[in-house]
Figure 1 (cartoon, rainbow, N blue to C red):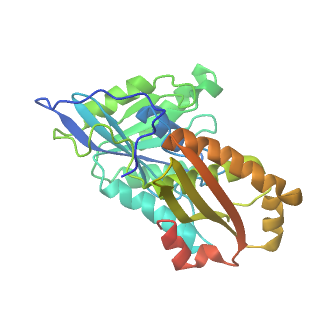
Figure 2 (tube, rainbow, N blue to C red):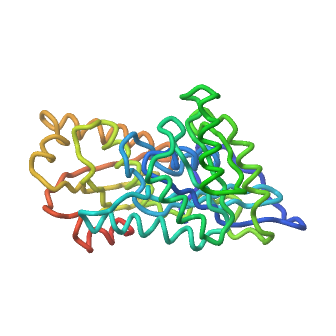
Figure 3 (tube, one colour):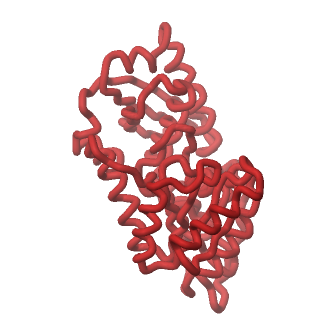
Length: 312
């Protein structure tokens, strides 16, 4: 289990209560509807990376929020999309769909600003036949006038009758507390499954990998395509002083992509490393030595070995 960020606010000790509720809550929807942003908002601490790029989330990620009367285990999933073209895309969609079958509550997210698209309708039709309770979330309501929500409510009510629909803004936090209350009420009764100070099930290596990938996306903007990956090759904490050594390889498919990431005289890779190190030091609460390397591996998105390293 990953340690809790030392810079995070301490959570109170939790004593078990009668009628305690606990369960898994899967967030799903198209790419870029805001699942990771909402996961972070509901957990109260950043556990999932966020980027404007689609398909930032590549594998299942747990974020855990514990209360005296309930424990909510959020499952952030890759965006459900048409996966022609690579084994990577297929495995991401498989991860998202499999998570729905094993959840206690499914939260189906819609980007309210973009409206209900054909892919949303296709997902809704699949969910209509699923077993777990379904909540519909209309996200990004801060980006459109309130009257524009009414047709979205009507359409979703037709696609998924008798399901509760909650409008929120994951970015601003508007209505997220109401959503959290609704989710908690829908959970089955049961004891907590994780210690009260656990925030995620991700290993420290995976957290480091994801924070580096987030800065890779941010620093390169739209110049680097989706086909990049980060794999941690060394993760070592020295006992003699609080220093964590992390060495990571950034995989790309073409030499031209490597040139973009490196930048002039390595300036862009240096910036990625500096920004990633700041986040890593805040999370782990110690000094970080971070070494980044860029490697060209043609067709890595179809290589099972690399995908296995990424948890897919």
